[in-house]
Image 1 (cartoon, rainbow, N blue to C red):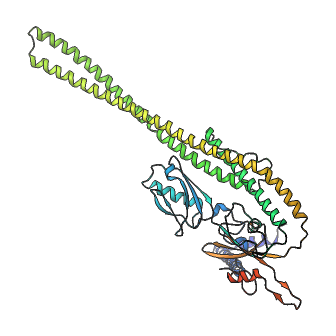
Image 2 (spheres, rainbow, N blue to C red):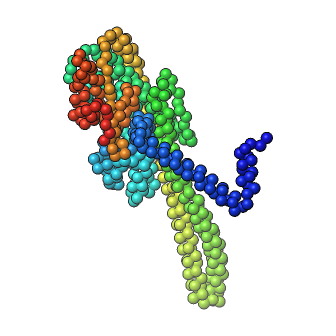
Image 3 (cartoon, rainbow, N blue to C red):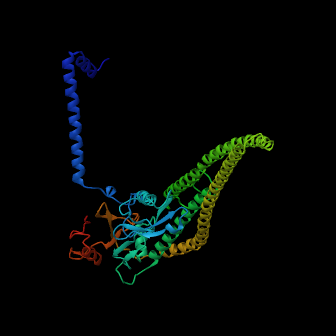
Amino acid sequence: MKTRGYQWLKRLWDLPPSRNRFLVLFLVTGIIGLLVINFGLRAAEAASTGPSESGLAGTPGDELSDYRLSPGDQVGLLVLDQPQLSGDFIIDGGGGILLPIAGNVRVSGLTLAEAQKVIHDRFADGVLARPAISLRISKYKPIFVTGSVRKPGSYTFIFGESVKAAIAAAGGKGLPLAQPESVSVSEFIEAQEHVRQLETEQATLLIRRARLEAQRDGRENFLMPLLVGLDSHSINADRVYSAESDAFSRLEAAYHGQIDSLQEQRPRVEAEIKAVTDQIAKQSERLGIVNSRLGELEFAFSKGLLRKDVLINQRIEKSLVEAQVSNLEAQIARLHQTMGDIDLRLRGFKADFERQTLGELQQVSQRLRIVETSIGPARRLLAVKAEAASDDADEEREYTVLISRVGDGHTVTFQATEDTMLSPGDVVEVKMKRRVSGDGLHTETQAMRNLKSFGAVADSGEPASH
């Protein structure tokens, strides 16, 4: 049974061609108009609601792989086979780093991959013939903890650090310079964060060691090692593996590119050696003919049957042929020396790469032994602190945490939880919630006054964006 829609379309199709095309055009235009109006309404609704916390540049959901460098960050540069050009460099207030020979390079506002390309291009511009570099962030700019914490100030940013860890590093919540009523919880959080940092470092070192062992053995790739006893999710093992895999691919590509470049010279030199050898054979054959002819002329001259100038001309021709053979033999010797130089450079480059890989592998193994030795006592201390914290029956006050973060040239302040992950340069504001006094009026805490002095909140106590 045919539906009404089908019957309507059938009648539309049976109309004359001119009316048919007019109606189809009318329907398509109407549908497009409705879509445009719907899109405009959605855009207006999004603009009226403003950016959500997940949409803010640099909010806790973003990955540090998209992090853009800024003044205060410290980057580590590794230039393959060029230790004098490698090292750690701090991004200055102008957004640049001063590199040996290459000069000042502006990297502020760039991702790590973009900055690596800029530095690579700078070295390739008249400094190195085939630069192979690897760039990493060795130290992020510090975070700042202020408000209702025991020790407000700046603290070193640690990869994967949470708000809870930053507050613990600042002595825990409470009024600055006040004697804490109980330190059990703060000490437990510090011990817990210390264990997590050791586990993160252990996982990072295990993955890096696997990458270096793959480089040493000449494998095409490397697999994620088994992280026994570690929570791969909490320590961001996938992100660490991705970064090490990327470094492995870049170094292997640069290494094989250099090897291929040297090996490509061998066929050309071998072809030249063959061509010169053929010329020597021909000239040697010619020299034999000249010598045979010279013997006949000397015999005729001794019998008085030949003029002396004919004999002299034959001897001159012999000397010329012998000179050509000597020049070709010298050319063969130079080509063999060139081939030897290519082989020597190949062996030297492979040895340098292997020596550098083994050196890094030794350093990683030594550090891994230290970390593995420290994890056991740290875990036992955590168990003791956990037991002490469980006995702490003191009533905890309620606090609100605000994070001020710079992104896309402006500062955004948003409310966070203790599990919110921090980014480099964050300002963590801890304030004690207002309490209601007996007369029903709100009493303003010292944390609120501190936040107002920084201009982070308005009189209503709500976070403000700059």
